[in-house]
Image (cartoon, rainbow, N blue to C red; front, side, top):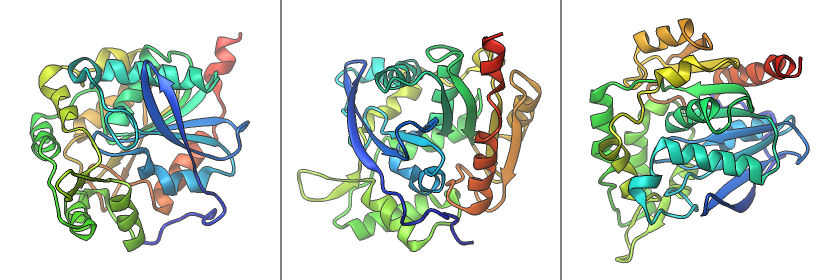
Length: 298
């Protein structure tokens, strides 16, 4: 399957920094500054650069902001990881980012933890300010076996002598993302790497981020917040996902905002959002009218 980016080569991201809730947050920005804004928030141990293909494809129509969550990528690591590596603080960061960029209303695309952050922010810190919410392969509850799998690999990031070895590891660990070109795998490696003092390379995140699951064991139990949402919600799921179980996805279509659900074959947790069917589904959804804004102003 080939990637679908009609805008390939026409857009390049700007790298920017903003102080949010007392921490320096790095983000990449795509598109025109006065276009409708889209926040794209990545998964647990990833960075905002995971959205390069989707952002490039949509940059003709939107101003796209792809932050690195605190403790990841080029954003600051926390000096208080127990308090700050959790959804409450991520939602606080999201509000500070949106306010710092003077954005009144935003669309949101979130993969895994980024989807949970979007749902939580939409119910709390950014209530009535997220007009369209795309949640990629996560729900308001998580199965314990999937949590155990995540804790096992995120909490002990491997180290390698070369970036090529790191890329080979990523191709195995993130195989559930689905098809990616050789160029995309290489970019994933190069935007995920940091050098250790001994000269080896590892993943570009603070291993303490995994403490979220032990320090806040109920952090992803969010049905009450989900049930309070009233914006259009698009739920994306990998057919083979072990994190978003079919019964949870089914419940999300019946409760709260009654999500529109699309399952993508050939991937598990989580679809990489880099191929035509995935990009086109998001493009179509984000282009739908902002009905909640009209209701708020009546």
